[in-house]
Length: 278
Ligand SMILES: Cc1cc2nc3c(=O)[nH]c(=O)nc-3n(C[C@H](O)[C@H](O)[C@H](O)COP(=O)(O)OP(=O)(O)OC[C@H]3O[C@@H](n4cnc5c(N)ncnc54)[C@H](O)[C@@H]3O)c2cc1C
Image (cartoon, rainbow, N blue to C red):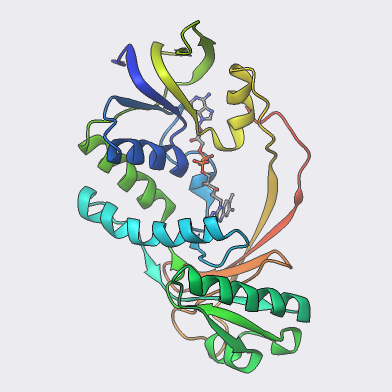
């Protein structure tokens, strides 16, 4: 395996985050950059993601970032020729309590200054958008027409190809085993296929980020959450495709799967106990 012995930046981890960092470095003019992935691209949690694109978020900076990302997918498809599998279905965030409804009103007001086109709707209107809804549990919701879902595999490869076109290198089946700091602040990145000297190292190890951080003496406060996925058949009267429908207070969200034959409901349950995931 031929891996360069020096790079300005080494990105550890070939999930959607590592691939995005690699692309954005090239976009900023840094082409001497190398991504190292221990297995295949997307072999971490990116492989399992539902790919839901949500623009309504508790943090305005994250909401703005998510908005930026939706336009970015079109740019990536043009550069790389790789489909991101983008489906704009619209998204419906539900409120089951008066407090949550107030929060949605706040999100709409904040969305206005972020340039977002959000609409507050009643439970009756929500039922029209998603007929499987049992509206007695909800007071209303907020609808964003530009939400939808993407293919995480396609997005990661679109980032990777776009970065490679701009000069970045990607090495797969190579595990970073240690990071050794030099006196000048640069790093020796030790891998199963040789060492690389890097000015900067990016930890994009996802749920392994804690283990990667420890190589540099940094304790990353990250833990694993258990995710439950249910598949169910098309509800009677459902439009095709139905919008993303979610209630983050109850930690549940649904999306149609690409074949529109069954629906997915994701339930985020309690954080699982920290474990050695290496
Ligand atoms: C079931 C499920 C549903 C989800 N649904 C959504 C959703 O709808 N919308 C959404 O936005 N997000 C969703 N997510 C979250 C999303 O998947 C993650 O936030 C995202 O994939 C994290 O990407 P990452 O690149 O940080 O991590 P990862 O994809 O885990 O990538 C980390 C990579 O680092 C590599 N690596 C680790 N250690 C080393 C090492 N020592 N040397 C070299 N390589 C190493 C791993 O092999 C891996 O490929 C979901 C997640 C799950 C599990």
